Image (tube, rainbow over all chains, first blue to last red; front, side, top):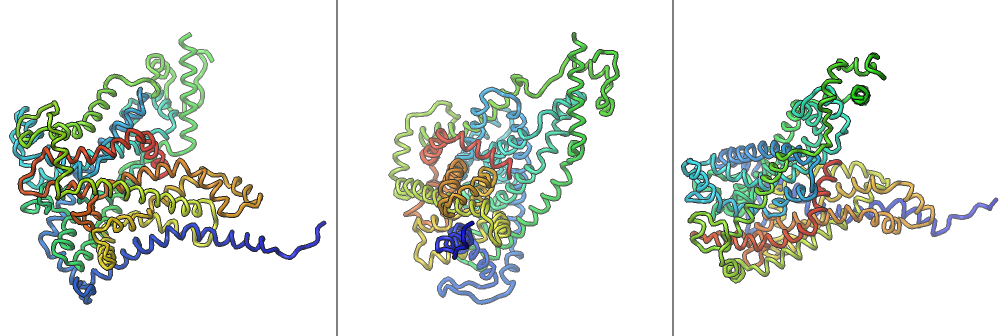
Length: 333
Length: 304
């Protein structure tokens, strides 16, 4: 047996190494994150209670005045309505289309990789570029969409005049860019579903539609929640597409497509009022939190996950499927 | 088992009458693995066309002249793309070449820095035990829900104080870290590296940094490549903050594109030629790395 030794320097070093290394590894992230991520968030709250003076670069405390000012602006309520309208018009069809496309991609198709890549093409196109392309397509006077509508006997739609139609046009841009991306996320979740369930369900006599709603949808639930939350966060912040929907970038002559973020930009860098812009940012954040929470609750209630969740049920279904197949084979002999 | 014997218990329990199961099964035991019919390909074809059509159309308009948009839609590109592209490149209000260069190098630096900071932090969160680690990780993930708008006012004030408004550094610095990146790397490293491997390295006398370098970085490579791609695409396409903090003299491509349209009389053939020019670099990237992007989205989703 060796005699006990005094702890050597290198061993000490190794102990410190073990203890402090983790902090060393997270420090580059957290140092940067604190300066350009956390500090601005906190400081926005401070500024939102101030009447910010750009020249002196400091502010005078005014309490909730900036918040009250915003909440009493008609433009704010218009922007809120527009943002919600565009959000609903984009997220609902987007989700339905994405699920549908994912379900098709989930079939045993040929050239899988090609199709998956194909649906992702719009994702790499910048939102500003998408905005410019669709702005031209939706041109009021004989834009591509209107001339197609004419062919099928529908009169020109004033895409840049009517609030609702401008929202449809902008929502189309959002859908164009995000449907494929979300379809791939949902596809990943679909592929994780055990194929035995479908076999069992087929044996049970459930058709494809019944299978989709009783097996696929409940299994998608966590992913659906993820997709809905991320598209809520993104959708309520929409700026790029409405900004380039006309050449003036101010949300239309009558604020038809003024969104909350466009309004925030205008208050901050059009009217140069940072106190109000900061208050607007906090209001937007609270709205996002609220809607995100509502979405979470609604999704959790609407998408059921009973039935296939119990382990016993799964086993039984599998056993049933196997037995039934075997029986069929025997009977065919 | 012959036809006459009673069905197994499981079938009785799950309520399938024996005869019915046999009848249905004999005709159509359709397993989902079978090849789908023509309608599936038709659907995908429509999806594919609607994905690429707007790009093709912008090329068609971008290769026409200023009257093209107003006429009937020509299906075939015109001959003016080069001249339109040149007028985009030489337009003094747009600064196309500086914008292209700014986009390339800022996106590159941002993506590289995010990969480095995220891999380091992700390794610590995934594989090292330290006081406050789990709580910090939850905190980082929670900040992913915070909108970008919540930070822009103080950031603008900060960069104005530094005299950096209009400088490309003002868009690089705030983007050097990413909460999503840390989350992504943590998730990946957690399941990609068995703890035994780290223990073995430690027993062999490797220091923490050496363990990180030989075990961590090696294992992280695929996830790091994907994180790089996503961050690059995101940085390239980012608009809101660059639009606020950069000016016309020194824009990135999306900012330059938005400037193309800010006149009373918009020549869409030039605007869309600019869109095509600005989109080509990322389409090239997509052709080379589209597969990785796809598998990255799919991998991220399973865990997310």
